[in-house]
Image (cartoon, rainbow, N blue to C red; front, side, top):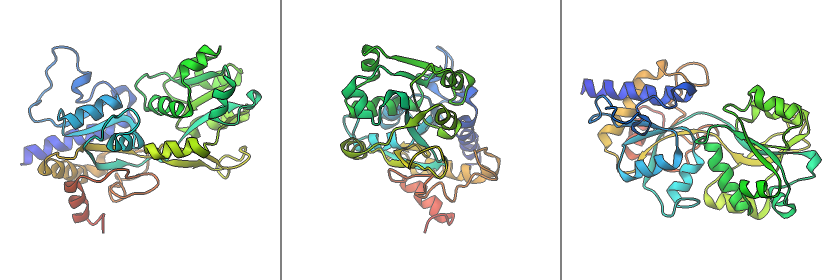
Amino acid sequence: MASWLLICAYFASIVLYAWFRPSWRRIGPSRDSLPPGFELPLQDKVHAVTFTLGGKAFKRVSGGGAEAVRVRPWPVDPLALAYRGTGPYTKPLPLSVVTVIPSEDQMAFAVSERTGVTSLEEIRERRVPLRVSLRKQPGHSTHFYIKHILDAAGFSLDDIKSWGGEVRYDAAIPQASERLGAIERGEVDAVFDEAINRWIYKALDHGIRPLSLEGPLLARLEEMGFRRGVIPKADYPKLSADVVSLDFSGWAVFTRADAPDDFITAFCRALEARKDRIAWQGEGPLPLESMCRNTPDTPLVIPLHPAAERFWRDCGYLP
């Protein structure tokens, strides 16, 4: 049991640590990321697997290819869509959550004032040829949001290009000089991205403002499983008012609903044992006491795995 717990502790650390080290995104214990012919050590015992592409991870974990999966980077709302069988998922997938890594954020669709655009629907109605800046990484979860939100609004990035616009993939991180410089030079009319506190100040300085989601479009998105959020004027004084957005908070460690209880318990025990050595974006030990509860930065959009729920309750983290 000690050796099994050590294996779980080691890979639990990698699973959580990988989120904070982008250069690890294709190293970790991800079978899909290994070069052809490479044999994963202890592959008959390793069940914690990192993935970079969300759809593949959901299909793989629900199909029995892995027992615990950390998607990097992948927020919780796509997990809700998979669980409900909405959006790109044709049927509900049998998934559950082990824990949620804290992160509070919003997804923004920001467009230049000079275009006169005040809503996503108006882009479709007027066929506006926007010059849009997106993340460079093709597997980044923002692309999932953008595709399905624009689908709900009745158009696509290809439509924007067909109207004479441009879709450019500027940077791996939103605050990179490549993107901020393009904003300053007036080379882009729109930025679709998360991590808004890294780029929205510069965008607002140059008249690029997040669009508020409202009416039937917002209702469709919430019915799918996306959650509304808010970009508050109190935090961004150059806004004219609070902006209704989509929440981008939380990073789920998820698993098959039928994953063995003993494995999930061992996984949770490993996290508890090593919480003071696992880096996260805040200070101090990993806050497991809040990572099993529905809070603004750790939203629980699908049920906890029963074994995880029991373990966290035994720790005193749940009532």
